[in-house]
Image (cartoon, rainbow, N blue to C red; front, side):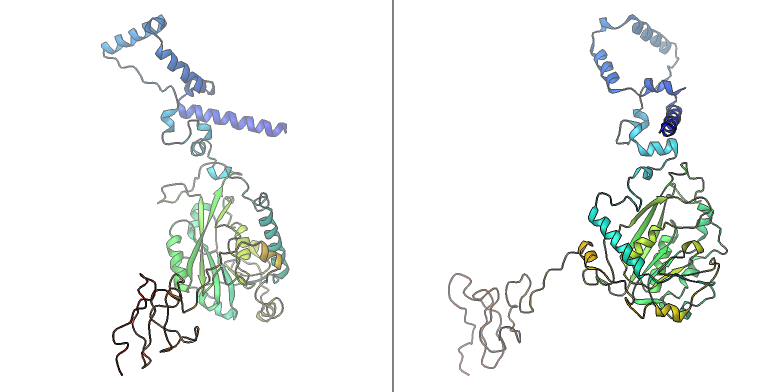
Length: 458
């Protein structure tokens, strides 16, 4: 406890020094004169309302001295006596509550102060959601296939040789951007044109999902283009917000064309086939996780992405066939087939891998009754009315008699719109043709409308 208190005091003292330097004060002790309290401001306002006779003579002499300097042509230096000038545009009059100013002073990013972002304590205040996550993790771990991996050069390897279809595909391309911003060194770097030429359609199942990490700049546009080329529709954009709690400070590796310090990265999500939240509960569980990952920025030279990305994928899609492209030894995971040049060995066998899905539970993890009860569900669509009702559900459709609905057929008698005695009742001619829409007893009580020629002799 004593060590922690000592650390907090040292950080507080350092912050005061930085704030004093920013406000032009020689030492932290002078902050009191610069950052005036509310009581000091009120005292000054009261003193300004006092009569001139009550003002101290020292003030008169000082004013006379300043006037004499102005008459002699000397300009008095302007001193700022509060911090309002430095806080333009901020919501708080106290710089200690300004996270942006704190980032300028200390290098601590504002996202560092968001609470309960870890997987362990995120759902402490939501017991049902916490129980749901626990049950899903147990089910996933129970149904996961053993991890398999294949060391190969994806430039030369044809993905169709896997002779398998996958429900989930996760791509971590070795972009040159990672070398410039994080110092990540790969054996070879891939351009977006090379990434787009991957034969993803040959391994994507009829209904499947794809996630691709695309950096923070050019990759946002090129990643969308890749999804379109591979036959996927972009449906989500998962954003990784990087904190720097372990290593606070300003970003030193900036992109040449960047305007701001980039502290995030994007992972685009695409969907193939027809998958609906309300009807495909056997394949997806939507709304379990959010599209935001808040995790500490990795050390310089590290390639790994947040492990939470795997949790998001596994919680959302119930498909068991999962493919990870550009995998590494550190990303080998149960339930996944990893491919890449940075894998140290291989254990992939097509027959063995296919055998994992020929027995129970099949290609999906399944779902327990408790998970189905706890998981968030989409609103049920409104029940559609029968074909004999038009918009608004006010009765049979206008001017037409539907076969098989209430025994109404051509020439079988009157038909109603808006109820038994509503608007739109029509009569039938003897030749079986339906007459145009008419008016029933609904208006004015004038009796049924008789179309012209209804009683015309045949």
